[in-house]
Amino acid sequence: MTSTAIPEGTDWTALLARTSFIELGARARAAALLDDGTARELCGPFDRIESPWLEPQGVVPESDDGVAVVKGELGGRPAVVISIEQAFQGGGIGEVSGVKIAAALSLAARDNRDGIPTVAVLLLETGGVRLQEANLGLATVAEVCSALLELRAFQPVVGVIAGALGCFGGMSIAAGLCTRLIMTRESRLGLDGPQVIESEAGIAEFDASDHTLIWSVDGGTQRTGTALADALVLDDVTAVRSAVIDAVGHGVPGRHRSQRIDELRALLEAVDPADPPEPADLAAVWANAVPPRGDRP
Image: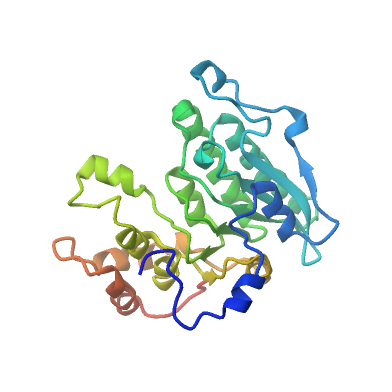
């Protein structure tokens, strides 16, 4: 089955009645998650905050640098939704877009210190750092991760990966730091993208043209099945919004996934690199590697 195959027994009436979350742009996705009438964009396109580095390299910039920051309420709670536009530079993060994300997270942390319990939602459709701004992008991704760590001590930071572009590169580290992570079966998550792996290690290591292989390793079904993500949802606005509200309702865990180093080490040790399991078998291998315990988000 490829990543886009429809399972047998699909209720086509229900499928066609859904409103696709994937097909929305970044700004519309953010507004769709927030309570009706509460969305207010910060540093929007009319503020003309764009990258100064793209035009000299022959790339037409966007006046929001591909990131929409929208404040409002989520299930009646103060929230900020930070949404990356996958249609601009493949969701690549540069100096301006990265600073917008980091600043929004830092301001949410300040709200919490001031008694306003603001949660954050990251809509992660990104291939990682923008090549045209490589070093600057890497620096801002580090700032994003730092701000995320600051905020998640107060309130949940929920990550959502919905589309087939997925979340890769430095921003996949930010995804791993989220309090909870929501994916669709169409989405992907990995540190290095398939084409990067193939170019560096060869097609024998990872065939970037094999979509079945890619989604069996990086796909949302696999990532939730192996507990690297927390919820698998339909590509539907209502379903994604409900999952986000549910994730926020779980609150801040005693230990985030990224803090459970002993468990993560046990997972790595359960895999023999000389004889790795098939992707379909990995969930069972890892389930036996770590006994269920603790504050799993």
